[in-house]
Length: 116
Image (cartoon, rainbow, N blue to C red):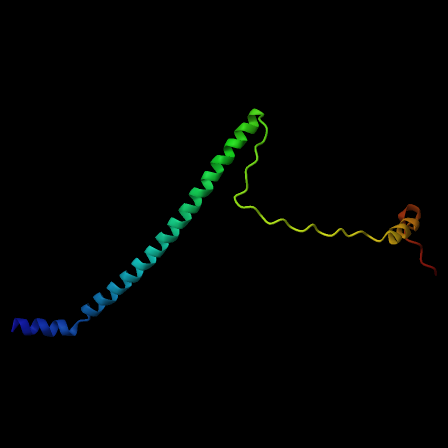
């Protein structure tokens, strides 16, 4: 009789369903945390690479402070040579005409009086 009562009581509650829902929620949270951890690890690698470059550059700053000549570094990959940009010259006739015409002068920087 106790067993029947227990089964009846267990059938009336939704504890099992709540547990299943909570387990699935936790699984989703675990998946999200793993993705975040992976992204954090990638960013940490990028930061470590940048810090190494800063350390190299700081050595150059110290040498410059001592007065040593600047060293140049080889580029990581050679860039293709860009074609030189064509030179554009302003038309010379327009420049001469603008130079010939002086601006009109005004006395005391006043506007002309209106005629009555």
